Length: 304
Image (cartoon, rainbow, N blue to C red; front, side, top):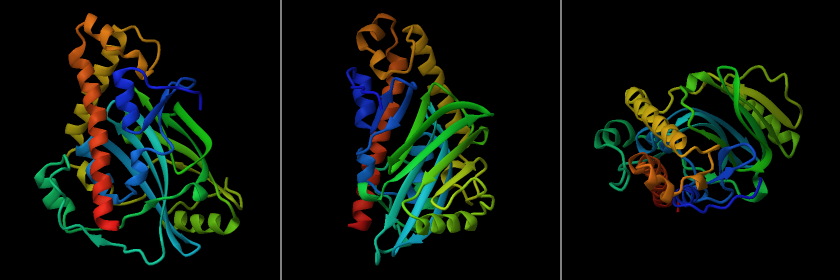
């Protein structure tokens, strides 16, 4: 990746939330070792994402067993507040780890409504996965399209969480498709993953090899999708549209040529009286940091 360092206040907030800017492709992407890597993964996080970080996303978890561990590779695509993006994450569970754990209480530090905690999430069973270490990372790549037009591409890159986000673009998840490829270290792991894909009803793997898989993620096969998004989608998407509009308006007023977070300098924002628009952007990434901190505590409470 081209070298980039956060210098502005906004850029530092984005960096603290786990993300960097790629000046070559004008996109935001996740760090190799952000706070998210300490939080593991659970479907619980996807179900709370709509309210916690204003995200309406399609999720596609693929489950398989390999070398005594239970693995899960998940794909995501959709609208994440001010940005459209996609993700591939790689996770597993050590032999003997507890699965399907009942969550009896979502602590108050989590920024989601009480009714969502009580009626949708609490008392359901969740499995908590760990983010794979460097030794188990996979070489991955993807291209994200909106209605057939390329928005961004990532990789090939060896990673545990390959992501890409385009600021100022508004999308419904159904408008998006991901063409993705994953390279595996051996035939056995690739075969196990293909079995997981077939169980998820991805039956056409004609572009795959003995050690790699290439598929298109468009309409998710996993059902049900995160429960928190269904009734809340109109409200969340309206909020996202407001965020995207505010972002593009501020970017236009500052006459910025790209999405570099360093371009949003407070001295220039104050000159155009853009503090209200700027605060919406700052608040969105502060919510992401709060969300990740909450995920990390829930992970530690239930795993360690």
